[in-house]
Image (cartoon, rainbow, N blue to C red; front, side, top):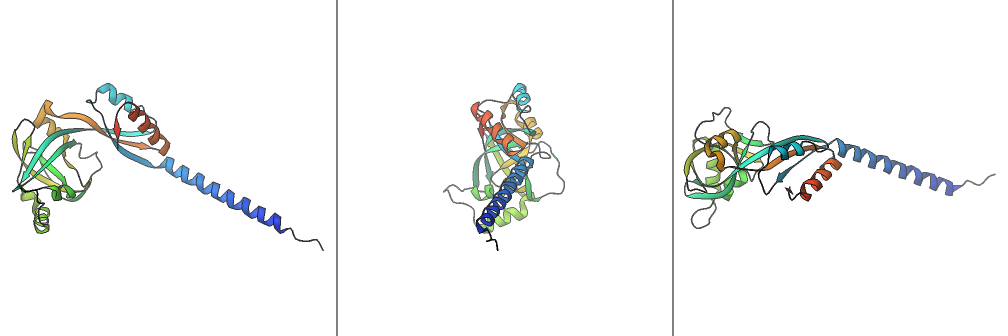
Length: 217
């Protein structure tokens, strides 16, 4: 009787295991290339039409949304928050609302959407954060709250809250068109939100942008 070749069985099993691992790796790579990735890009100078046109030539790019900004000190009761107020397209930028008004109107009064972590970042004159009970009250009654925004020029404007953001939780934003109408040429336009398909496309895009001195997060 011919002796069974166990060595051959072991080699065959190893080959099968390696093939399965290779297939799984290939599947994961394909999934990564089908996935959508997003990040922000911040330039040291304002975006120009030429910059935007070049960005839109990147492989796999699906969306580029410029983000406006204004430095501001926001006052709520006896608390203040120093922040960079972001101007975004509310219908395009990926925000998740924890709570918001079902309908809202944009007028001359800035309508802010405040990240839940930003509420906890307010501080009084002694550097103390608001108590949990006060945060809970703000979150519940935000449509009735009145805030004051002071910009770099010292101009003060009353504002109200249109919603609490779950994501980005450390973000204070408003509709970009309203920001432009209120602050005009004082706004900065050197940040943007990028959505791109494919892991390799995302890596390449970041390498290109960072090579041009643009910070990507």
